[in-house]
Image (cartoon, rainbow, N blue to C red):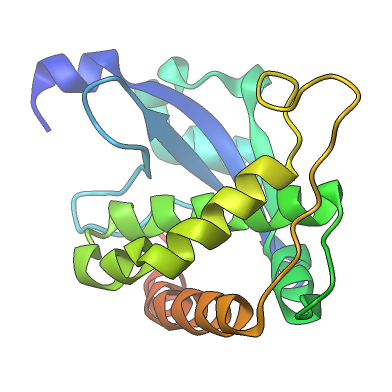
Length: 183
């Protein structure tokens, strides 16, 4: 990453809960690069269990982090919501939020490790439709007309492909996020 792009990066603490364990990362975004998480020189995620530990690992770089604007996701809730999807049954706004946040988190992690080929499977026409259903199911005020709401109704083939491709990418990512706890 060149210096100009690096200087444009906005960085935020981002926690994820997986199997009941909370891990902190640094999420990066800019107009020039796609969203990703901070990695070290060995291309391993920079992780910590506490904010203090993460600040220590980052050293002076921690001054660039917007500590008061962090986010957290429960992958445990994501996997539960994905497991509970049923054909012919609509999803609540909260379920759509959990699934969309999880999908976006997994994509950002995959992008961090440049998993372009596995990620390309999420771009099929059927999965684009699933993503759109989740997006519109969030019923964002800027998108959903006042006094209206949308609760997506699922087809079996949508659920099956969503589960298959997300699980496939996660198998690769799970190894990468547990291989090494950065110094």
